[in-house]
Image (cartoon, rainbow, N blue to C red; front, side, top):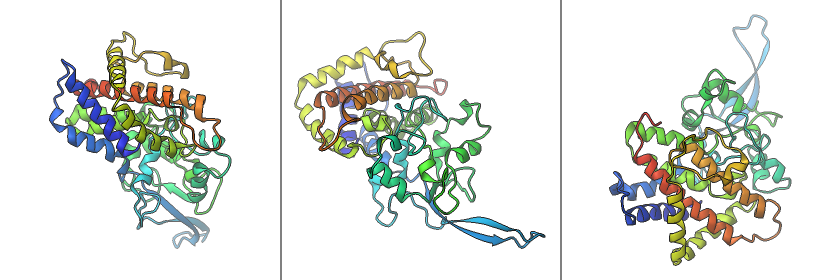
Length: 363
């Protein structure tokens, strides 16, 4: 979602919970700050991309004087956005974590992986010079400055926050997973290295982290983070891990669509009805979801990353139905857009209640 849609969605969450009886939030007085954070999540400087230049050096302390390739890190000029000089906030690298690759199926690092050009769905759907392939070409000799790489000094805290390496027996440490997940470019375009081969963190890991943080700190900024990421999961392109493929056009049309639904009383009634259906209790809440599980009715006691994944499963289904094979001018399916927006508001209401009721034990 764009900032305007995040603002309107999160504002409606508070308006409806305030309107309904029995839903008093402990952080209701902080709603303005929470809405602001829900907008500003895309503008975080928590992912550093570094351009490398290779060179050969002779090590002075090597008795055999063997040449050694030394990557030269441009660490003095950290890059958190597409163009650090222009500092475009809507192109910050942190947004690369706001995808989940449902179409790829089971992930390598998580239940579903995040965005990746060559190790994900992007290269399969963008075979020309769309946004995904253009980014892969432009960033071919860049790598994410991640734990396990030379000279790392907390340059990309997003990796440390959102990795769940300890839940996967494949790696013994964060550094080991990150080194594998974000392969270092040797200073020139190379197969298997750099940005095109990186696998970014999936978006469902983000609300889980901030839910856990709120349980520990009661910092209401966490609420804005969770709302933002849940809402991004309602965008078909985010759920299908593509930067392009009508992504910008869809979100721009969604901003316009919001002005239409605000005048529609049936939209609000639909949101409330769906919200109440999510309030149930699941005796066996899932720890993983298959693609077909979009038909399930989520419950408030589901783990928060499962709620995010369920939202993405529904969005990906709409991507397959309307946008995967679309060519020519963008033609939005408005009924589909409306249904996903209803789900985004209702699910944001549920996670807001869930956060308010959380304890450190819940996390």
